[in-house]
Length: 444
Image 1: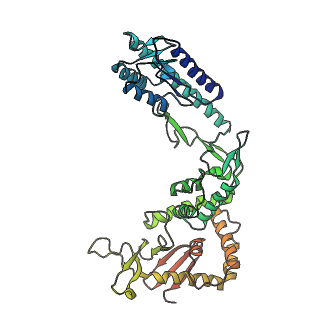
Image 2: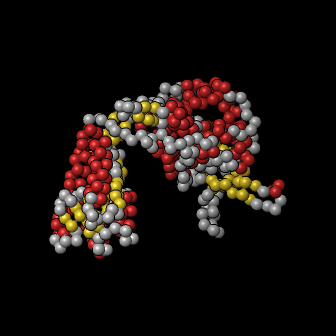
Image 3: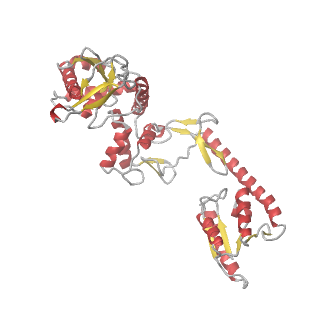
C-alpha cells in the first residue's frame, strides 16, 4: 500500500499539516500486518486543481503501472484532486490495473461496487469547492487593487528586491543595468543590439546569468514600474482549473497606482522612451520596414536610408567583381525592381562609402554652426514633449564638448540621425532625431 499526501500552499500551518500527513500514513501502514509500505508520495505547496505539476503524484501513477503498488490511501478527494475529470480518469485507470484508492474522509474504496457513483458526486463537490475558493481569492485580490494595495512579484523583476515588510526596494547593482538599458535605447541602440552587448560583456540578468533576449528588453522599456508606478491586473485568470491567464484588454477593470515604490528611472526619461518606441514603430510602418530596430557595426545605415521619390526603404546590395578593387557596396530603392524584369522606382543608387562621409560632413557642419544649433536646442529644453526635451539636452551636452571628426563614429550616428533621404540630383537630406534637416550633396 502507498499513501498520497498534499497541501495546496507553502504557508507554515499548511506545511505542518503536510508533515503530519506523512507521519500519520507511515505509522498507519506500518501498524497493519496485512499491508506492506510501498511508499509515501507527497507534494507540498502545489495546487490540486490539475495534476500536471504534481511530480510525486505522477511518480506514484507511474509506479502503479510498473506493478509496485496494489492500493493507495489518501486523506480525501480534495487532497487527491479537485478536478472531477482528472479524479475519475485516474481512479478508472487504476481500477483497470486492479488498484483501488481509499478516501478516508469520505469512507470510499474505489474497488467497491458503489464506490464510483459516490466518488463522482463527491469529486464534483470538490471541484465546485475549488471554483468557490478561486472566486473568493480573485474577489479579495480585486478589492485590494481597488484600494491601491499592491502586491508585486519581484523574483524575475530586474532592479528590485523586497524588504522585511514586503515593500519593493532598489537593488543597486541591477538598477545600474536598468538605467543603462534605458539610456542605450535613447542613444539609438535597438533592443537586439542592447541584449547582444550585455551578453558580450557578461552582464548578469535577474537570475545571475549573462543571457539576454530582445523581447525581455522591450518589456523592460515599457514597464511602468521602473518609474515607481504600478498598473494592476494587466492579465487575469480565465479558467480556474487550468490557471490559464490572458492579457486584460478591457474585459475587467485595471487600476493604476502612482508613486507606489522608489523609481529607478526618472519620469521624463521613461516617457521619452515610450515616445521613442512609438516614433520607431511609426517610422517603420511608414517606410515599409519589417523590423522597428536595425543597425549594427558592419551595417549602421540599415533602416536609415530612405528613397526621396517614393518614401520606401533603400536596401544594401553588393555589386560583385572578380577584381576586389571593383567590388562595390551600394544602396538602392527596394522598389526599383518590384518584380523580375519590371522596373519600378527610378531613383538613383548611392555608394555605401558616400553615406559614411556624408555623416562626417554633417556632424562637422553642425560644429561649424554651433551657435545656431545651440540656440535651436536650448529653445526645446523646456518642451512639453519629453523625447524632444531629452534629445535637445543630449545634443547640447555632446556638441558643447565635441571636436571635428575625420572618421565615422557609429555611436554618434545613432544618437543624432533619424534618416538619410536620397534624391536623384545627388542630394541627401539628413534628418536629425530632433527634426532638424541638413542638406548634403554627394561628393562635396
